[in-house]
Length: 161
Image (cartoon, rainbow, N blue to C red):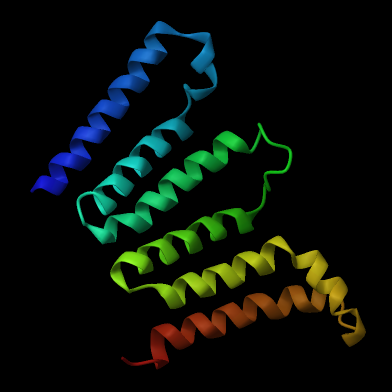
């Protein structure tokens, strides 16, 4: 019960501050009057619920929502911030890894998502380093999704606990 009060309180305070600042239209905060800020507020509420409320299952959605909100804020502000699908996968991987630190679950998922993120973010570099195999980029582009389908199918239909 304490955990839900914590989460609800943070959401209400965060949204209240968001709408109040938006109403006053303070130029200093003009870049934050957008929907990514709402994602960030909800993500932070989940993270606080996860860490302070000892509800470790809230860490993953907290990292994902806060990470996506932060991503959409930074994408147009920092030139070095990657505008790539791999960024989202990396945020999800971080969520699984942080959740694993507290709950002991999700490390394999975190590592798989981290591997996928690295593969996506550095795809061109990986293709160039595999040049000695004489693989064309199109060939690798077809092999990777098939590999994902096979591994995902294995986890869903074949592997038993």
